[in-house]
Length: 288
Image 1 (cartoon, one colour):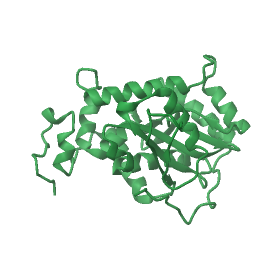
Image 2 (spheres, helix red, strand yellow):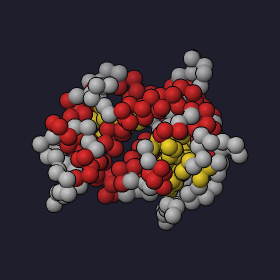
Image 3 (tube, one colour):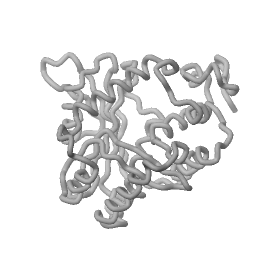
């Protein structure tokens, strides 16, 4: 069964809270300052997604950056695939920089790939780069994250941490000052074992024009690489509860708070920090 496209009552009521030129200036100032910050002052959205899954992970992530030695093979493979996708889809002009990105946004360019976005919150800087961000008349209308999954069954599921991450990207654009009344956010999922960078890059463009609540894309009538790519779209909605959760997570990183840990043993079973964790759950155990 497909995941429904969520509609909201407030669509059309939101507007730019800042001009595009003002947003541009603030973004470029923050990006410039980002290079001068220490890592502890910056939180990436990828880290927030991990923390949503189990806050204990965030403690180890803060102390130890993942390496090829301590990261599971499936995560290494996912990172390699992500890098290939970005390299294949990025603009080939080496002189095309962030200023050029914002030139295109102000000019009303309809599509951009992988622009950096930053926002200050509770004394920290949030940093994110969506895989695909589409603009129409300088308004963000479609935001796509791409993920390879290890099991075919995961193609049809949108997990809580994935929903939260999608929402975080939407609220980032909202807080930056964009009109998000027409913003849809979505995951494009594909079987990790069948990764093909060219086919997947084509799929990103197809989801930008395809309608439907949850669709399966056949890229080519003879294609065998991606017989089943799934798109899971949601419409962005302002949510005070999720906003509080986001602030709490960022504050956790700022203050080094105590983690609560995962709630189900299966989460611990797949955690790469399990050997070092003092909150690990045994098989069959749940945290109450």
